[in-house]
Image (cartoon, rainbow, N blue to C red):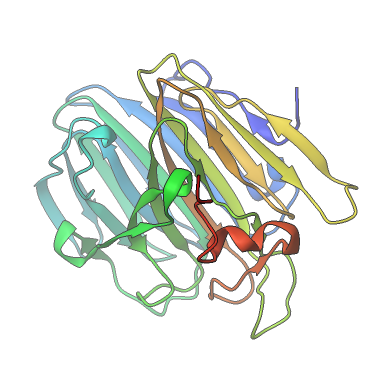
Length: 273
């Protein structure tokens, strides 16, 4: 099995089904955890030197930080309702407690924090939605924490891709500090499927093919992208959702298209029959 694929595990005593750290991933910035909590169950953490974005993937909860008290947030019970999510930004040197009010699927996104922003609710009204692509390259995006929003390191976005379509495509990469054209950003993909027994194909590869791996993530698996291109292809019969977390030394999303496939962005696609 690819070292870039983190399989869903059975919940531990805290409800964790995914736990990726910079140390386990072999990189320097992104941490990502997922918890399944029953109603009434709580998760508490000190943020230490990390800023955190708590994303309610599914379910309702109350959230407390040292300065913030939020009751009964969350609307959707499944990401495939395609409602905008609720999220909470928590700075470094803080503490949070999340208490599930229903069964809760909670993503905890982490990256270095520098104390520049207070804790805040990121509600549906503050999340932009957009359609990207055309033809069989269509997807629908919720920009939870884009580079235009306040944070020190984190970038967080969720993407919906219908059956038989590609996403994160044409192939693109962001693995060099080469502004203004490209920035170095590590990335995780947390995959969900409807129906849940589905899977997708995701390839991670570099121009010289020194890294070239193709994986089949199933429901609640995570693909780690340390460098290179990283397209996703869905399978007939199964819609795909993924939650992306990115971070690097510069908080800008700047990327380079793979030259061979950039034409898919042009007016020549979709091809005429």
